[in-house]
Length: 252
Image 1 (cartoon, one colour):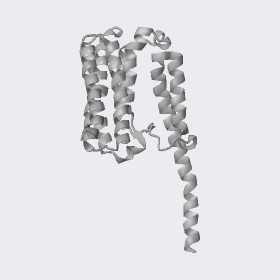
Image 2 (cartoon, rainbow, N blue to C red):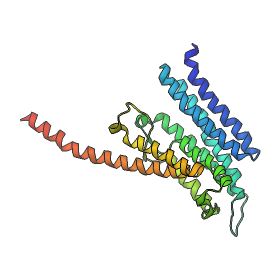
Image 3 (cartoon, rainbow, N blue to C red):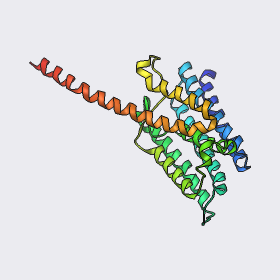
Image 4 (tube, rainbow, N blue to C red):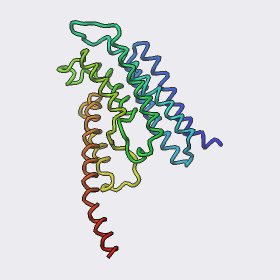
């Protein structure tokens, strides 16, 4: 049935964009490679949207989506970092092996996607940083360098920053950190206030700082998610005595 294959075709377009991006990255065209990640992000959003709209979601689409994401949001970002690394200032020491450290992003992205497919807790929220968010951050790096974002003038990418960046991003991909998922069950502000706050803040940061706003969006995303999780925990604790007292009244 053709209708069932529409989301899979969109997912395949995501994979195709990732493959083209890899070619651009190996040819040192990192701007085009970054654009391919953003194009893949669009396809990644619309394949799930199309599956829900057409009511044709299934295990085949889920597995294909993960395989496409490994390439577009795991391997391609790693190659971009691999190409950026030799251009960094290494201070007094230089090692030809350092750029290969970037491929840990691909390894941890694959682990993250496999974990996501088996984790039933991630229907309404993410546990750990989604691979598209990580890929978008890395895709912004060539644009930030090209446009000389304000904070890169005082924070040059050096050997220690490169290592710390890779380690932190790998950790965020697999850590047990609850993060906001932009999945709307309804459009009421009360149920989605943190989602709306994230969207508005993201638009403002992009308008103000363009590509330089993407790292700031990631920081805001993590902070808002932590605040939401803390509030949810507080509300759960406050509601628990009410449930207990209600049980005691019924027992009497």
